[in-house]
Amino acid sequence: MDDMALKTYREKRNFSRSPEPTGDDAVVRARQATGRQPRFFCVQKHLATALHYDFRIEHDGVLLSWAVPKGPSINTADKRLAMHVEDHPIEYGEFEGVIPDGYGAGVVMLWDKGTWTPETDDVDAALAKGDLKMTIEGYKLKGSWVLVRTKGWGARRPGEKPAEDGKSWLLIKHKDEWAGPIDITTFAPNSVKSGGNFKDILLTGAPDVWHSHKKAAGGTGGDAALRKIAEKVAALEEPAGEPIATAADAKPKAAKTRAATKNAGADVPAAPKPRVPKRGGAEVPAAPKPRVPKRGGAKA
Ligand code: MN
Image (cartoon, rainbow, N blue to C red; front, side, top):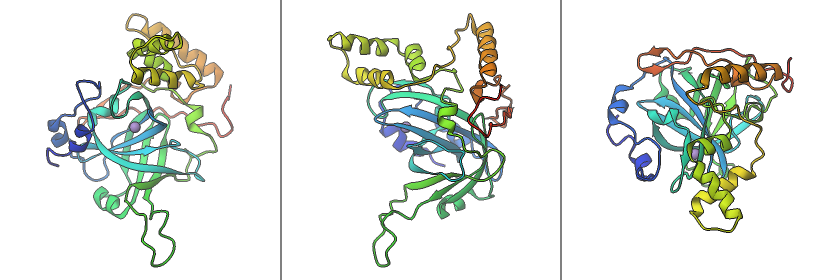
């Protein structure tokens, strides 16, 4: 991997305006996982021009990335469109916050994270072939999955030129104990980093942005891009997030919230935050294994 690995990523962004990480070329060079070893995985829920879920898997020192408009589904009958986008820095995998303007302006939530392990020895060959099978060990997504490149929508008739741009893939859950007829995006909508929903993240990371929305309602000026973000968040019908704990009250609050959530039978990621052991520089979350209930949710 050369130093141009993150060229496209960097070109799209103005880091004097965006809190997103620039990416470190030394990290790119240091993270050269090969074969069937666990690597970093995450999904970032991104409220930008449109809501989508950015599915990212570490390979060759960067996060290979796909934008999934409807989000991942653990229902094996679903084939979720996944648009291949530019590689992101490994450091991006922990990012959650507000991008005030420019490319990707909006709110980013760390919706799931953990590790993925290729079900093949040669990831590059699988990517070239357009068929990458993987095992995911996240908080919400688990078990066997596949990313399959589509042939393009116009490729059906013989002699017709396919509309193939190589960017359209499908993300599909394989049948196993982690599959089920549940909409995981509504069942477990909030952050695995902060516990918050979009509004919580906005209020925590950029309260001014939220207040710009209220000012707008009162007819005053302000930054149009920021107001737009706040208005989008305000228009969402989000279930309540877990309160984002401050350093001072983190422990009691977190414990209380977990108990309440458990009693309500609610959210998968409400499980206690596991220790994060370091394995070869990779953050490998110790796997909490909440079974996803097969029917609609509440067990208690
Ligand atoms: Mn995105």
